[in-house]
Image (cartoon, rainbow, N blue to C red; front, top):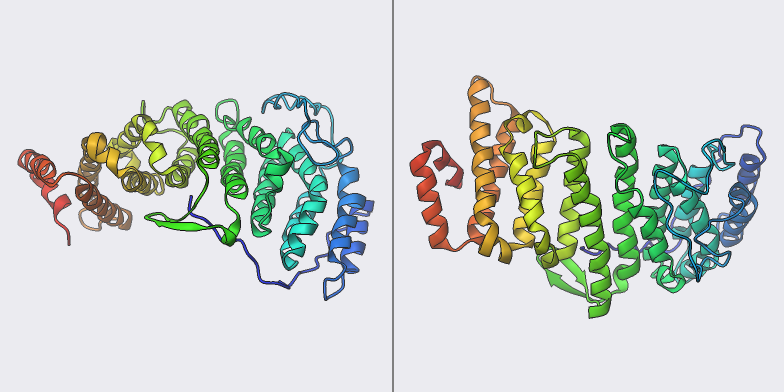
Length: 418
């Protein structure tokens, strides 16, 4: 995973919103506290603490069962809460936190830490961390999909803020696993048990939160030592730390993305749930790039899925699915090139040639005015073909191309670089 520099300039301007008041005490109290923040932000830490203790905490009475009052993992933590059960929240219960104020207020608080200069930002964030994590986990465990989506959005923001503060608070408190368990329990929020729109709403926030969580634990902003790679700057970690990082990334890939795509029937039938499939494929790219060569053990599942999508003639009519599948194939060829060269390049070539032929067939239909999407897809297939050719042994590649061009003359244009 390429590192991201989350550092913010000292004294970043802070907006001071006024939340819509519905005559409820929380909104009025929050507005009053924010109004009293001085322009020089000298009293910002105190104001944030006041917001968390006087406004947020009363909405989440009882904390969270997997976090101690000190903001640490319990010595004997209860089992992770299953996504469909949300066992500590009754279906008939209407928790106090289901206010229109809750999400924007927590979002503002998390963004506000970045207005503090270092090292004060880290000191204040770590001191107030025990008040931040229980509300976020409670939102993730809530039943409505919009609450879970808000929870994951806030978890991502919290993790990015931790990264910007160069803090290792998640490791020290043992809450990395607690947060990751909350993510894992929602991986399979998929049709038909979950409507596709609700599934998308949650998963579009879940996966960015998962990546941000891994960054916050194993990458510490711009202060970390880096070394160059073809994917960008990669953190230099100890072997033990790298093994742990790979464990979480493997879980995201195996138990999240690949399990979800298999559940949706990708690779075994025509693509259904197109929006959801497209999103999940888009998340393959950062996951594989973050894993690097460790992803090669999963190529036996990934490449047949992608090949199946590229060979499906109906995929061309779907605006975003084909480009996303091609981008995923491109990322896998580049990231896992040694194993692609030794074992998987014929399968990749098979998918690209089949996709090319499908595009040509569609061009025949729209001969008078080729669709821009077809022109773009042709260009992308040709570019990926060139990347693949540079990965493979030249003699083996030329032999395969000669056979293909002999069997199907239209394929020749795929291998002509303009």
